[in-house]
Length: 230
Image 1 (tube, rainbow, N blue to C red):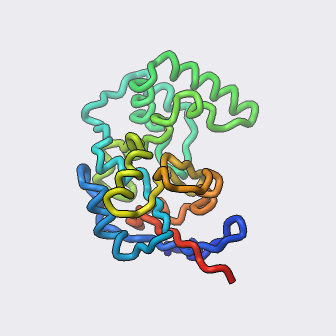
Image 2: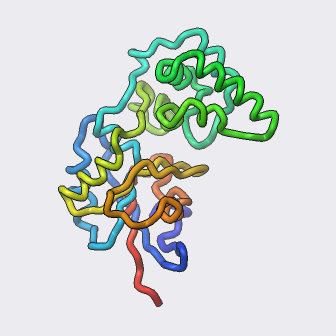
């Protein structure tokens, strides 16, 4: 398991063991089915639940936007100066992510969201901007080369049809999976196999401490295994 992340946790009175699975540096256009077969199946047992980083699935789906294809306008540069930074990843303080937001939902909506976010800050409310522009914008990652130089030139969108992806993985490999957008501040469940019978709060609790990490760990897969009751 990654540094400072416990292997065993207890959720709702049940113990679980979690194993971080190291992979190679996944490239754009690889097959997520092949990745699961190569790295997960040798360790998987019936009853296990696989937690997958959304970035890996999105890269396999070629869900990327390149800096070279997205000229940054004056509005994006202006608005990004007033946005807060975060240790959780790229935010709209990056002109590129702000430009993506404008391209995705339109300038008028972004301006109104920025105004409301400013009022929200005065009232002690955070995250107003992302609530208003939606998950496609809030989930965009990349555009920085702090950990991996290759990631400096493109942004990674959230996966398309994550529930369907999880069902496909289970049909092809037997592995029950969920796709998560997790960092050290927050966890979102983007999708899971239709066979998963745990509710969203339970799924979030299983990875609430972001066991995959968000640095150079190269552990996009976390295998979660229920342990026998004592």
